[in-house]
Amino acid sequence: MTQPSERALVPFVSVENMMRLVNARGIERVLRELTDAIEADFRRWPDFDKTPRVAAHSPVGVIELMPTSDGKSYGFKYVNGHPKNLREGLQTVTAFGVLSDVATGYPVLLSEMTVLTALRTAATSAMAARHLAPKGARSMALIGNGAQAEFQALAFKAVCGIEEIRLYDIDPAATAKCLENLKDTGLKLVGCESPEAAIEGAQIVTTVTADKRNATILTDNMVGAGIHINAVGGDCPGKTELHRDILLRSRIFVEYPPQTRIEGEIQQLDPDHPVTELWQVIAGALPGRRSAADITLFDSVGFAIEDFAALRYVHGLLDGDAFCERLDLLADPDEPRDLFGMLRRAAA
Image 1 (cartoon, one colour):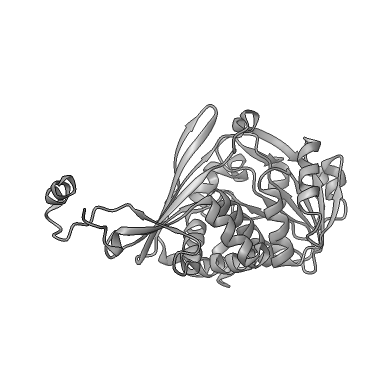
Image 2 (cartoon, one colour; image 1 turned 30 degrees about the vertical axis):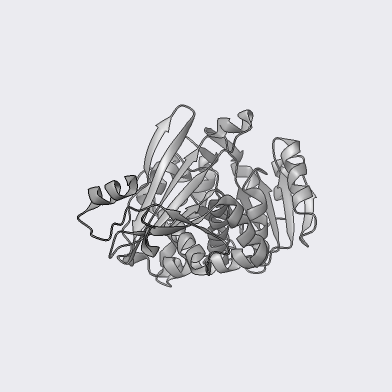
């Protein structure tokens, strides 16, 4: 039987290998490196094709495709968001992604992206805070202690120097899980019984809840001057976390406005409400935080360029087959026009 050519064997990073890769490298190192990789691609934002993700909504969740290209490489992610899955013992979010060579169209990487999405989401949050949070911030409230929470905590520790995490979740078991998982990380951990207690003394507030509904995790009276809000959980139509009045008092930073106005916190605002694209701050074209009294809000919904950067980062770490398998994914006959002949020879 004809053996597949080397170019037809596509590296595949499974969940097991992704975990091995992260643990071998160290999660905080990975988060720092991934933050820098995403920031590097934000600095060249105009190089990318950009489109809102293609979403198929249902009453119980959403399935999305997130594509982009810089003209040399093409990447996409398949991802779902089903909050009801938690009640069934399933993950709320699962994902996989592909990175391809534009010149040939051949995939060069197939990867799990459930773990990688958690890492890139946390890295993007820390990247935004690096440019927007008050100087010297050392305490962060983390409201919503589900699957994303520990990644967010460690990213802010590794990238922004956060020392204290104040945890709150409507489900005390979720907070207990976080306290256990983070107990040996060097962070000061404070379990709180209300969101009000969690934000007390915090310079950064991260909201990362999962319910697919318009919720009010933070009310206007809870938010004082000078804080940075990292709003992660509002990421599809009809799903928000902040009271509208908070938005009206904040300087709002977004990834890609055509997508964020549909999915983010700013879906609550008029379509022409001013926002700043985060890449312009990172590139030095526009200011971020202008004064100590500013309330800065990163309305994070996730964008394809972040996944593209994450896939390229992982691809760059692959050295041989230590953290991947090679999949016979592409039909690649010796004579490109003889696909049927390849099939016949395989039968023989």
